[in-house]
Length: 419
Image (cartoon, rainbow, N blue to C red; front, side, top):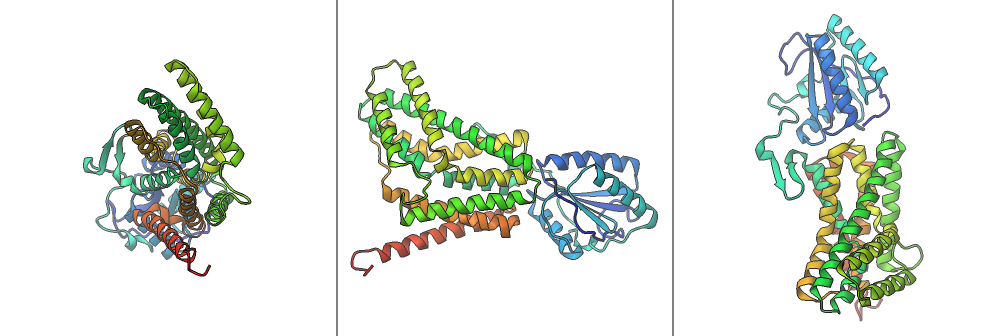
């Protein structure tokens, strides 16, 4: 993550860990998957080759909570705020981010410290037995179907992806469309038609949704280094959250991220026309795919909240390339779990449930509370999502608040309650 320059620090006297007590030490805090960090790592390798007496201590902080605590300790001791990576500390200065100008300044500071032996007031913060960053063992990996091996040392970012995608999977708009589609197809009592229509619908909508998320991420990845982007992401999350929360109390009234009544009638008519037509399997796939693509685009305003939040978080971590597409695949797979459950229940039982307004309102409530919680975290506690404990606390807290609101509302609106 490339960030602007920050106030000066102090650093180094040779105490603490290392291969040589006389060495000058440079402390480098980075994130696995951060492209800017990768560029700086190459620069630091070359710097060590030119200066054998320089010792670079490297700390991966996105997926290693112990190393993150080391960075926080440096920040507290030396008086700066942790806003992103990479962070470099040497001599009496520090840098947040990396560019050509910073490279010149870092090399000049290294040369000065090699000559004058800079102090190291934060060396005592280093744990003597800290793990080498980025050295996961076979026991730290998990092999999943389709996704391959996942590094369990990367729990926070994988957990955040899984939790957001799972909550997103309960989206009332997409579930309404799927249950309506399956209800009409199941009416034909044909498992083959149900299989073709349902599977095609899920594949196409997942592809459109994945393309939308990738597009949102590409925008965030381009501008994530700008200081206002996190505030904008939080603002969008807050707006979506408030509107969803409003829909729990006043469903569909005023501003609402739902499919309009007219839109629902149009979608239902198109599904009926498709189901009643006599088509070959290939023709049914083509018609279903075209209809699914159109419906997916229509319902995007209803489903866009969580993908925008997730894309902002992932872009801020500096994730790119294959790491991003692996996480996106995980997101789509988890997102589809709920719809796959509905689909297979309809396929094998030839019965389909309906998404009622009451269910939709409850889903809007929990989705809204979680979005508001994520907005607050992005602004006030951005580091919370970088640890397993912090991520679980955020989501568990939001779900608890949502459950309390639901319980109080049901008591207050119960017949005879006086409301």
